[in-house]
Length: 152
Figure 1 (tube, helix red, strand yellow):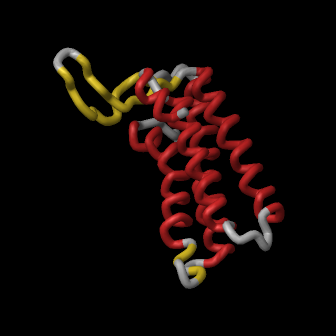
Figure 2: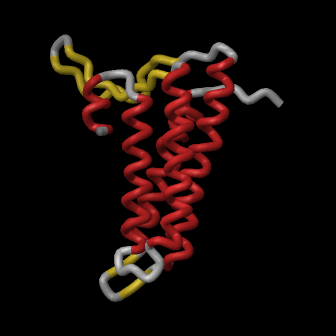
């Protein structure tokens, strides 16, 4: 089975940690106590980062076979001659950094299970580090300075 890269697959790399972060952030706690609990929060955030890591490895393998992508994902705004877009640039350096960012983030997520055990902001912390992974991936994958600025 040949795995081919398409725009939805490339979009899934940063969106997987973002979705995990949103689930842990919105459903992790409420004012009176927990909604889904520590185990579920760590599971969805680690799963999101793990999906991003696996997809990043596939992207790296395809890039080593000659795949290249530089395109717009979303057209945000046009001001006269200035186009403000969200796009990706996938080349060998980007693919390598995607693997590095997702692997290190996955290891941090796993380490954090024991490190944050018993702490008050456990679910919120998992949501934040998953959101940080999303921001790092958007920074690494950006093809313009505006997106690079927002990813930092």
